[in-house]
Structure formats: C-alpha cells, structure tokens
Length: 302
Image (cartoon, rainbow, N blue to C red; front, side):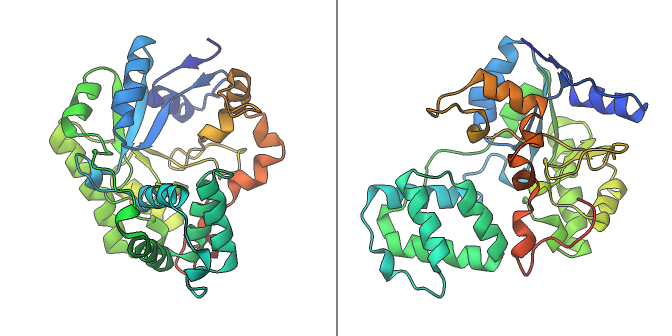
C-alpha cells in the first residue's frame, strides 16, 4: 500500500548507474531457501503481483537436513514441554549465562535470537557439543521434524517461471570469513553450478551467510562471477554503495510486533522506513554475534 516493490536486479541496476533509491522503493528478499517461502510467501507474492529474490543454500535444497538453529529450536521446544533438572547440565559446557538463556527461551520469555547469538560467539565446536549434549540428555523427548524444511528444485523451478528470482547463499551456509580459500571457492562455485544446472541460468546475485564478509571474501565473490551481493543490516549506511556488499534491512517477527505480540502494520512500516535504525536498536542490530568466537569472522569490511 505504501511502497513500490521492484525486482532486486532493477534496484541494483539503478545503483550501478549512480542513481539514488527513493525511501519508498524496495526489493523483497528471503535467505536460506526454507519451504515456507513456497507454501506461505509465494501465494501472497502472486496475489499481489510482487517480485522477490530467494537466496538458496543449495546443499539443503530438497533435503530433510536442518541448520543447527533449527535443531536448537526443536530442543528448546522439548525443554518447554518436559521438566528438566538444570543443575544436571555440566557447568563447563553450560555456564550460568547459557543456562539462563536456555531457561528464558524454554519459558517463552525470549525469542531464540539471544540464545543463537550467544552460541555463535562461542564458536562452531562449542555449539556442536552443546547440541549433541542436549540431544543425548533429552533423548526421545527431543523434537526432530519429519517434514522437509527446505524448498525442492521442482518448487524452485515453478517460482522461477512466475516472477521469483534466485541467487546463491553459498552451498552449505558456511561462515565464509572463517574458512580457507579453497573451501570458500567451493562454497561459491558449487552453489552457482547447481543453480545453473537446475534453472538453466547463472546466479548473478549472492547473499553472505549471516552477513559475514571481509575483503578476502568479497574478492572471492567477485572472482566467482557474481554481479552483486547483499549482506544484513550490520553495515553502516552512508557513502557510495558497494554493489558487492549491499546493505539490507532485516525484519524478524519481533521487529513487526506491537505491545501484545500481535502483528502491527505501524511497527512494520517504521521498520521498513528505517526509523528504528536511528533509535535504541541501532547498535544492537549492527553487532556481529561471531565477534567473540575464537574461529569467528576476521576483521575487515562489514
């Protein structure tokens, strides 16, 4: 009702021409390639004739695999439904802060975001050990969804034929700043190859997993043939736009809710206009959760 929604390619083309994007023009993007992009978002996009771009983590397409945060969500649900002895968790792996975050998430007093950000800061090895311990501890009580969480290539082809564009979100959703050059190149090229094989066209757009990039990663993305790339809203706006590190505004469920946790059109519009970026949440949303990880992203362009 209040914005002009354009294809992402169109907006980027205007930036390349040196033109400014008016505040009420935008493009819609989705990361990861979850199946609900097809079952929930796609019907609404078709109904309103809206273009969008979906960035695929191609190793997950058509599979029952899960990202680690999906596994965590199932474990938190199990913690919510079954009484547990929190003191039985080893303090060496579950320090007080982690137990507190788990309790808050399990009680419904907090979203998963503070918990996932904390684990990102602990590093991939610690995260894996935490999840493995919780899975073993909860046993049959843990929730492992049988349904497919990710898009299939058939669904992707249908959407591609009906106004939805697709780009790469790497192959396995690896944190690119934390892996060596050879693995980084494979993440970029394997994803691009699979999209070409299944859709018959090259992926020209790339989305950095978790918005993590530095000069080395950006250089690899350019060398892999991507014409532009997007990150999250950790970037500092201002100055000429870098088409291989474009700023996006991330809107999660908590960013569009009113006082009683209902969807608020007013809050949603304020988010899209960037009003909250200039208020208290600004610094929080630019914080890199991996900064505390011994194997997290290196310094550089953000």
